[in-house]
Image 1 (cartoon, rainbow, N blue to C red):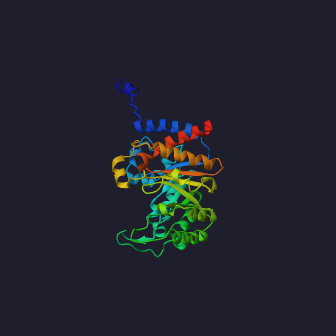
Image 2: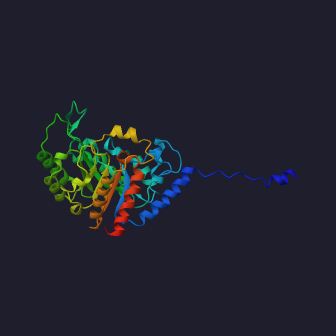
Image 3: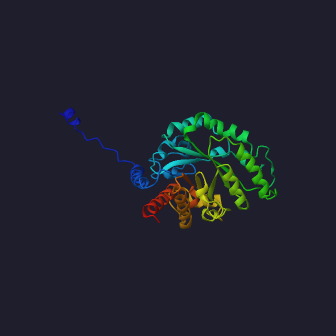
Length: 329
């Protein structure tokens, strides 16, 4: 009798993780927004290894190391996250085995925006207070060896725009804008044409009509960046018209006048919006609409330090952009 009753004992059912339930709701909301957006709009974040995104992008608690290694698979399931920035390529070449591991986690059509290595885009080496000349500044061969060839070999279907981020020149090194643009011109003409490129400036002196003309000559895009010491993306429109670009890249990094360490400490663990910036959002929508209305693509990459949480900023931007397209305003 006891054995018979044991057959009908009730086995407790484990409660779903609250983060998993939250993520299901997030995906439903995001999917509804994504259905209202043109397919030429690509939102993403500057990286993906943030445990604080549990319930926003990830369904369970994982370490930063685990997410860096394996998080792309779940990241790419988010209906609005159709691109991502790969920042690590700025600091050192990405090993081929890591590129293969990334590719195994990504769906067809998902493209990553790689930052070109600092070994190519930094004028100097060492600490800014004691800089030394960088012999590989604007070296096409170094860019090919460190980034383009590995991507071409094992990651080509997932390689999106290559972002050429030029950090501010050290104060002790005087470089005239005309000199920089002449070197940039020679560099861009020699780049392999099988990749797409976007230049990101970190020195407002360089953002001139002459700079714009260099980009146009080589069908290279401009990166509209929201960053500490640059004009806002909306102000950059006075120099670079997005309709004239082959595609557009927008990078939302730091509110002008703020700095990385301060915002990181204030905003972590990056699970909520702390400082929504309505003007920044309006600028992004303006740029995206102008690009998409010409039938071209736009890549919008959001950093946690812009407003507090990249995925939540993406949701807000996507909702506003979808409304703008529907209303025709």
